[in-house]
Amino acid sequence: MREATAEDTAQIHALACELAEAVGDAPPDEGAVRARLEGLLQEAGARVFVAEVGGEVAGVVSLWIKPDLAHGDTVVEVPMLAVSEGHRRNGIGKLLMSRVREVAAEHDASLVELVATRANVAARDFYKSLGFVEADVVSLEFVGDVENPPEET
Image (cartoon, rainbow, N blue to C red):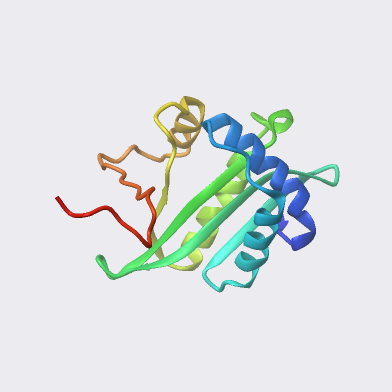
């Protein structure tokens, strides 16, 4: 386990493509992944870790350390966790999430939050096995044109 570097872009991109396929999203552009990774590596509140097996990146996790004004504390958000198909069920995901919990403890975070789709039963079962519980919330996403939002009705 180590902090990611820009040199990991191709392998992180491959993991992002596997994740996109698993959740039914379009695969990301490698250039966009590189730009985002380079940006995250410069952000004080962001961290990206990779797990290597035999010199190959077998898994990746990214996280945001966020101040939570509503509760007056800190929350760690995990927008991405991906483990390559050939390395699943070998403890890589558990190891990456253990590092997330360490970072959360270092920042006195009261909560680690993440999103898994209803259809991604394997991911939901994995997170539950680590002590996560499914919250009773409704997730809303704005998918329109932010510069030209719909008229209020």
